[in-house]
Image (cartoon, rainbow, N blue to C red):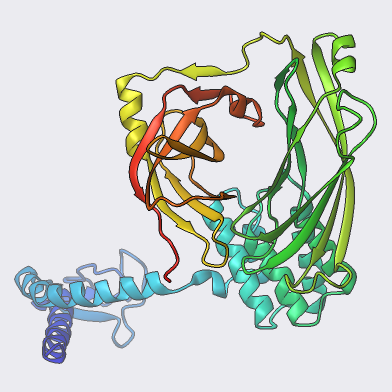
Length: 444
């Protein structure tokens, strides 16, 4: 059915074009001779003047003059435009769509695409990096250019001030797949994936522990999953107590969608704290990371290893100094908290009857939670976890003799929990109870 209108509109467009050409050419009017070059009326000139008095053209030559003057036909032109308009709309729309569908960047020279990959506009930058990845994957980048491009991607990965785009990691992976990436460059890529920063809680009161966080967003390719082991050693100096574990370990999976964040709570030496004045302090740690390309290959040696010393500052304040702002439990805040916090699931591990899993959703909270999470059935209570922040989480705990099928999930405010975080300086003071949450148990 769509063919007939298209054919008809094509005929109308062709007829309109023919009529428009006829209308623009016009009809000859009058019998005077005119100069064909400039249109000057040569009527009455003498034979002794073989040139046009207006433009100097030789009018004695054949076809140098014409008889009469042509006048365009406005009415015919209007009819032609009416015939042409539907076809112009149809084919103009189709042409516009076709032009919009063209990926012009695929036709740009390599140098222009590389320049656009440095754009400060994220959409333009990402489009260019994706095009570079396409050309590398299709083998359309010379070895010399590819080596320089890989070095540029590695430099961006190592620079924490440069926003990381996972497509950059895909380019390095594509070069490795094409067997054009030296092993040393691949190991450099792996070592730079967990670019680590050290952060400590800004103000720590005397008598409190020192929370620290090591990590950053994973700087890898969009499809990578790498297992890593992190070892953190507190170096001598500062106020961390001597009997604190010298080395702490983390195992985690590093991938494009997540953060590499490791949190530690370090006790402070009471005697050194008592002897130290209030004010800035320093924490100094050694961070060692071992990485395996496959999460099932940790029995062998790591693919890459990196070690770096990290240092940051924090401030020791008086025991009664305010380090957090309590958010009052007013009706408006409570309504928003009750709306924003929900329980997605509460279930027992099918392989371990004592392992209880809780999944919390937290959206649009006006104030952070710093709350102990407790499961309650009647007069009985089971402490489960501590939840801090404004986003959801999943957690688990081992609870013996946990037999209810329905419980209330209680969020009980805990200033001490807030003090154990790196960046929480506000918390809601209200208690939140989500009632009648069903406990999902394994089928018997």
